[in-house]
Length: 348
Image 1: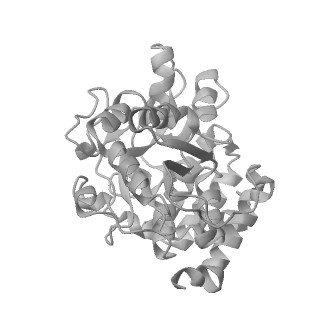
Image 2: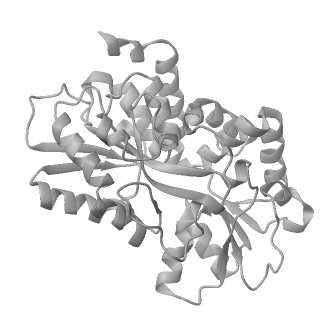
C-alpha cells in the first residue's frame, strides 16, 4: 500500500517527534479516540484545522450553510495535526487539512498523504503560493512583523537580529509553540544557516525574551506595557485596533529580503485517503472564492490571494514588503526546527 511508508522510516520519525514535542502545548492526542477506518462517502466533511476557531469558525459555518454538508472540525495546533495525520495514515478521519502555515503542508506533501488538486484550483493562486506538485494551495497571506509600543519605542530596530542587544533585555515577547513562529525559524535556518539561527535563539533566551502561548497575548502585553516589542503575524494587531482605534502599538516590518521579512500563507490540502474528496474540493474552492477571500480581507485582515479581491487599504501591499526569495515548500523541515528549539531550551 503506498501510504504504508508513513508508518516506518523518516515519516514515522517525524510524526513521533512532533507528537513528543507538542504534548507540552496541552493538545495531546491521547485524549482522542483511536482513528477508525474510513467509511463510505457521505454528505459530510471532516476538517483538521490548525487555524483557530475564532478566526475561521464563522467561515466554516458559512460553508456548511451554503453547501448543506455536515462539517466536523478538529481544532488543534498545526504541527500536532500534521503529526496526527502522519500517524493515522489511511485510517485518518480527516478529509481536509487546513494549516496555519506552509511548512506543515509541505511536510505532509513530502509524506505522500496529500491528494493532487485540480488545475483550476492551483491556477487561481500565484504559483509561488502553491505546492509545485499541486498537493496544497495557499488561501490567505500573512507577513511577519514586530508589534511595537507606540509610547515606549520611538526608534524600533531594523532587524530581528538586533533584538539580542542589551537595549532590548526583557522587553521582547515570542511564542515558540506557535506554528507561524516555527515556520519563521525554519526560514531563518534556510536563509541564514543553522549556526546563525542557533546563535540568535540562544541570544534571545540570554536576553530574557518573554514567552507567550500565542500571538494575541503578545499584542495585548505590548498594549499593557508588559513588553515593548513582540514577534507576531501582521494581522493580530488589526483585531485590537478594530476594538480600540487608540490601541498603543503599531506594526513594524523589518529585514527586507531576509527571514524577518517572511511572508507565509495559511493553506489547505485534501487528504489522499479521504472518502469525501468531492466535498473536500468544494471546501477548497469556497476558501478561494470571492466570498472566502473577502472574509480573509475583512474579518481576519489577511492578504487575499485569489479571485481578484483587493487588499485592504490599511495594509502595506505585499509588493512593498520585499519578502525573502524563498520557496514556501522549503519550510517543510518542521522536525529540524522543533529539534533546534528544544536543544536551545525554547521548548522543553
